[in-house]
Image (cartoon, rainbow, N blue to C red; front, side, top):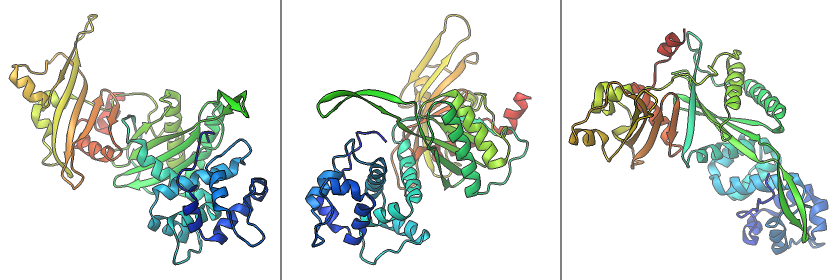
Length: 395
């Protein structure tokens, strides 16, 4: 992980004092040589200098062991993000004894010490929910098979095979090893969180006041959402590389369904904006969409054939009202390129959700929670081309 990492949550002396000393000693003894060199190991009377320990943890440097830095990273992040119930459930699942009076930070440290992979999976799950808090761009690929198999949660072996294939792919593309796959199941969808390395980077730095070069491999997270009722795989990859998306299609199909050709690998047509032209305002009627109160069109772009690149964009609080006000309809001969819709959920979350759709296969959501709701709206209102029609077009 990047050398700029600084534990902020678990490095305070007050928090460290609340950690059971036997548990804290396990961490110190695991890296005894380092902590002894930093004058942190307990004194003869068993007392720990929490102020000194806090300073060492809060200031990772070039002599800190990489494995210790990794332990501190996952401990710090999960302890801050997780709730105690989730951590207790994780500890029980892995046979880790938890005292009755225990802090969230202490459970997180115990899990890291006794089941490090499990804590990394939990961290990936929390990280996935943060992936889409900033606007993210998904590209979709449909299944090629005639009949979709009934969804079953993949076994650990299948996930491991997918992880191994992607690890080999990243290694062959000079991005190193260390790929990790985590799975979160949601209603009608499976989220695959992929942690992997990026191309090596070199940066100038100072070491004890002297100029030097620092080499490191950045960490990246990608998100694959498989909507198993529609046979659609939506991919967000941080590098936005086409070859990487094709690898995901190939190896996820192979890992889950023993079929490397299960998913398409080309950017074929997945979405259509034609409902806007064919049904007008009625295309946004949400009375039959579970979880949605209303939808309104706020952005529309279309273009005309020819060498002039004539493009028209409409932006308004309600584009259909705006078109009515100026007496304009969506032209029959125009190619619909992009639409922006604001969705209002009917549940307690409240507030509008921004969704943009670019023909032929790009969807953009402002927030992680938008993905499922928007997908339901797009599928039920006809903006997603049925998979069978997609196959007929390709034949």
